[in-house]
Length: 238
Image (cartoon, rainbow, N blue to C red; front, side, top):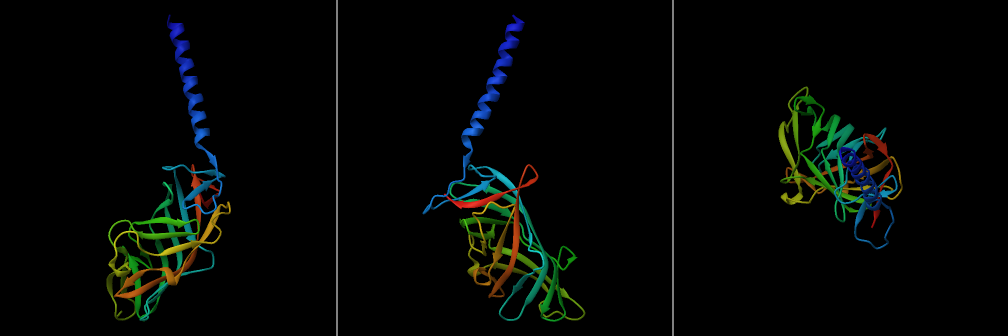
């Protein structure tokens, strides 16, 4: 009797494994562009991600370039290091990124005698928790996960008196809470690549500082990871 039960149990385990494999295969679909579609999907290694599927991503500043942040009145900061590690999750109709932008090796060009720091780390700027949503395969909008503060910047004295010393909040333009903030564009979103470049444009920043428009300008690259290994990926119209 016990041998019969054992055989039945073994058969059940095998059947469960077969069903799991079949279910996985059924849920995986090739990445097929739908012209005129209103949804954006994440493609990983040629397979379309399903809603709820999540992957790690990492972004860095494009080699040999910098990110510049500035206001019309003359505040100008240039940073030569950027990192943003988070997750990319396929939702119904769009891809959502949970993010946090960190800039380092930042130099304040103007005003004179000013520097920046974050948590006592000199030359650093770190954003609040951010979320990004694809507006199309080529565009994503970054915005504060909660509230309207995008980043708090601490200016300090540097070899003299800094006229803007202190910590100030850079907020979404017009103090608008919710999905409002900088838009970035992907250069070639539908190409299957290990890394994709995306650009912050001055004209699409939608942030303000001291009631002035605050701009971000620079180019970064984003890589996607599956089981901790870099993987080819793309964004496409579906």
